[in-house]
Every structure is written in structure tokens, then in C-alpha cells.
Amino acid sequence: MKSSRREQNPNQLVVKYWLFSLFFALWFVAEAAAERPNILFIMSDDHACNAISAYGGRLADVAPTPNIDRLAKEGVRLNQCFVTNSICTPSRAVILSGQHSHLNGVKTLVDAFPGPTSGTPNVAEMLRQSGYQTALVGKWHLRSPPWGFDYWKVGPGQGLYHNPVFVASTDGVAYQSRVAKTAKRTKGYYTDLVTDYALEWLDDRDRSKPFFMMLHHKAPHGKWEPAERHKNYLADVEIPEPETLWEDFSHRSSATREMGTSITSRLHPRRTMVADVQKPEWPAGSIDLSGLSDREQGKAAYQKYLHDYLGCVKAVDENVGRVLDYLDESGLAANTLVIYTADQGMFLGEHDYFDKRWIYEECLQMPFLARLPGAIPAGSVNDTELCSNLDFAQTFLDYANVSDTVDVSKMQGQSLRGILSGQSPAQWRDAIYYRYWMHLAHHNIPAHYGIRTNRYKLAFFYALPLDASLGRGSFSASTPGWELYDLEFDPQEINNVYELPKYKPVVQQLKQRLLQLKQQYADHDEPYPELMKRRSELW
Ligand code: CA
Image (cartoon, rainbow, N blue to C red):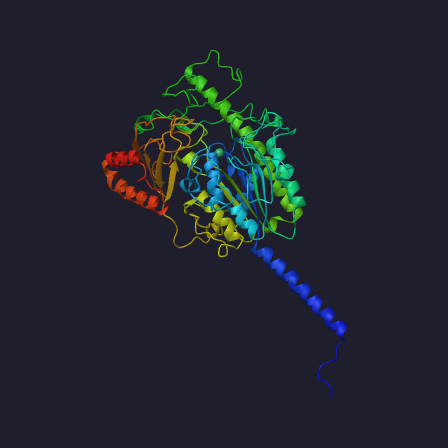
């Protein structure tokens, strides 16, 4: 019988089969890659929005950050991204676990992040198990060995700016959370070196998998040591002072009025200082204060702090530029989600503070810029939605398209993917919950928790060390109190309106919402009788 189809010899059929298979495999890989972008998470330490020119602010013209700003121009800027606990180590644990500090166990600087068998979620491990190649380069700052990463190379503890120590997973030595005095040091500047290591790893990576990289800078954390090439950066420039540098604290509650660390009073205390308080550390004689009035000495201290800090930022910005150039040149930019953030904000003289820890805006707010061409609209800004480092882990998982296949039930955040892409969910949170545990430890700041909505901030300074590893046994209770700020009329938080009768209904409403949030996040006060006593007296 004559076939209606043209006869094909078996060899042609095999070739066609293989060509089809190859085409399908290539299509599948391309589709999978498009659906599963690389994720490059760049995080610096203590980088305030006020020191990123994309955020505007008083330093934008004086100390621009053109490379970091590229991410804002080519992606999205979040203006309402807040940390749950404004201190280095705890913030890192929240980012990895998607859990508040009381759940992941890292409430203070000395708590270890739970290990692989603890049941604590770790987004790096989840991505690794989902087919991502994972790497961590730079500052880790958790009191336990890194896990969840195919490769890591970290500077133990705070690390050193100049000629730092690095330990890599390939070195075959046990991880140490502190730099050993005998450890081998690498010639160079930390910010440059971690970028070198990140780019080297990207060059050598397994190209059959998408990657997840955490690139963590030490800068601009104190003690501030700019690179040699930036020693004279802004040397002849007078840095603008914030309006609140010379703030009158009479509006504050008695819980905070005399607390915290001052820049201008480092030589002439105008607030009560305790022995444990740290001050900006400068080499002896690095500022000439002879013949200056008290006020002039305060101004000089502020100038010194900002010059050193901005010098450290300058190297971060340059190195972000190196990374973005690399992504362009290697063709990775189109399919790599790049995020720039910091572990929390930082006071740059606002309220006469340096450091962080408080629920106040400058250290509560985190910078957050994200770029993914085609998925995140270029030059977009979100002013509305309340976002948090609690959300980062679930955001990564969502972009990796594994939110449905990994167990996120123990995480407490929400994916920011919709918000980043300009399609905010119809329902989004109306408030964030904040808690700082390290009562009086290091910077004389009372333990507190609070709530921030789009308009208001209510904080309860319960002022007890409770069971926090830092604070307990070293510090006793201090004066408790409440503060309320109406951010619509008082974005600088210089007018605590808690006692004003017209805000009474707002206070009641916020207190109720605060209790709901504590319930939602399972942060219960009931196990602490002394805290419950303060609540019963002051709520
Ligand atoms: Ca930090």
C-alpha cells in the first residue's frame, strides 16, 4: 500500500527527535531562567537613607551616591521600609528567617542564629534546596557559623576596614565569630575586597543554576575608617547640620529625655551619661578643639563624624558601581534582581544622636532599592505601603517562584513582589510592630516596643532588661513612659503629643492595635510579671 506520507528513513527521524528535544530543553531552560531570576542582595551596615542621594535629604547634593542611585533610576525605591529591631545582628537574623527577633531567638548582639536542625527558617537554605546556587560574601555578624550557602567568605565579627581577615567555607577551618589575633590578614580595603570576592565567585559560579548572593558590606559601620583614596573626601566642605541637632528634649517622655548617646556632648555632657555609653571613637588629637566654645566643639564633633561616615559610604557607592558594571558586561543585568539595603537606618546627628536602636524614624527606616528590568518599573517610588525586613525572605522566595513549594508557614512577613512591580495587593498591612530588647546596653536606650502606621507612631518604653542576653544582670529598670508622634504634622518627631487630650482616641486605638500585633506575631508579655505590672500601671 502506498503511504500518503513521504517515507522517512530512521536516521532522519532520530535527528529530528534530537533536534526537537534540544529545542525543548533550551526553551525550558530559557523559560525557567526567566521565571527564576538571579537574586543579588547587597546590604551595607548602618547606611541611612539620608546618606543616599536617591532619597533626597540634606546630604544629597553634598555627598551624592550616583551608583546606588542607578538602582532607583532603573528600578523602585521604597520610602516606607522599616526594620523590626534596629540593631545589626538581630536585623540579619530577621532577614534570613522572616521571623521577629523573639521567635528566631536573636534579640541582641550576642545571640546565635539557630542552626540547620533547629527548625528556624533560613531563606538561603530554602533557595539552595530549590535549585539556586547560594553564596555569602562579606559581613555575617551572627554568632554561629553561616549555613544555607554553597559558598561563603566572611569577615568575622565586625571585621576590619584596613587589611581585614576573611575566612572562607573552602578554607577547611572552623568558623570563628571573632577575629583571632593571629589570623592572616589580607592587604586591601574591606569594601573593595568583598566586591572582588563577589565578582570572582560570579565568574566561577555554576552557570546551570540561578544564583542567590548576599553581598554584605561592613561599611559604613563605626569605627569609621575611609579608604586611603577617600581620606580627604569632602575635606573642604562644611556638612549641613540637621535641624534637630540642637533639639530641645522637653517634649519627650521622662523615659527618653535623658537617654541615648549625644554627638555634641561627647566632651560636655548635656544629658545624663552612664559609664557603659559608647561615643564616636576618634583617634586622639584628630580634631583640634582648642579655643573653641562648647557649641563650636559640638559642631566640630558633628563635622568629624559626618566626614568619616560619608568617606566610608563613598567606597560603598563606588563598589556598587563595579558590581552593576559587571552585571551589564556579563549580560546578567537583564535577569538579576538587584536589591540595595542596609541592616537598619542610622542617626546622622538627628536628635543629636549617632548610632541606631530607637524606634525613631532615622534608624527605623531602611533604604530599599530594587531593580529587575521588565518586572520592576524604572524610576518608580512607593510612598504608601509599610514594608519591612521581615518581608525580605518571602520576597526572595516569591521571585524564585518557590513560595508554593517550600514551607513558609513559620515566616511572619509577606512578599513585596507586587509592591515592587507597582501592583500593590488590595489588602496590605496597616501597621508595623517594632521591638528593641537591649535595655540600656551599650548606648543607654531603654527597652521598648511600639507601632508605626502611615500617620502615627506610638512607643511604649517599658524600660526593663527582662531576659535579654545583653541587659539582663547588667542594668536595672529605668523610668518607663509612652510617646506618640503625629508624622503628618511632625515628621521629625520633635513633638511628643501623647499627653494631649485631642489625641486620646488615637492613643486608645493604637494601643489596641499594638496588642493585636503582639498577638499576631506571638510576642507575649504574660511570661514577664514585671512587664505586666508596668503595663497595668501605665497602659
Ligand atoms: Ca547595623
